[in-house]
Image (cartoon, rainbow, N blue to C red; front, side):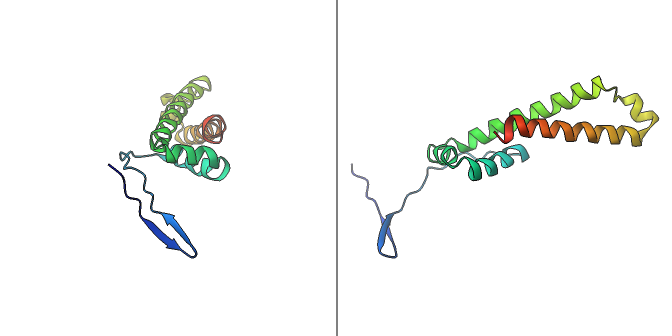
Length: 118
């Protein structure tokens, strides 16, 4: 059984009407979206290969999960190491918020450098 290919006129050229197969709908979080933007701009061959092989969505979902897990694991580890506890939160809420924001910002930098922008 032969597949009929249709074409669209673009100026002087006839281009084939190509369509990728449907991919499952997966919610991609902030980490996956950042990585998508990075690979589109800085690793176009990887992006094109993943897109045309229909593996982009699964790849981004995996990166998103890895980054999310790493982020929460590091925040917990660093907050324990630096003594940022629920007791501190109860005694001095503003200091706790300040230190937790600092930890979260440092952790975000680590995740970005290790997973997102590589």
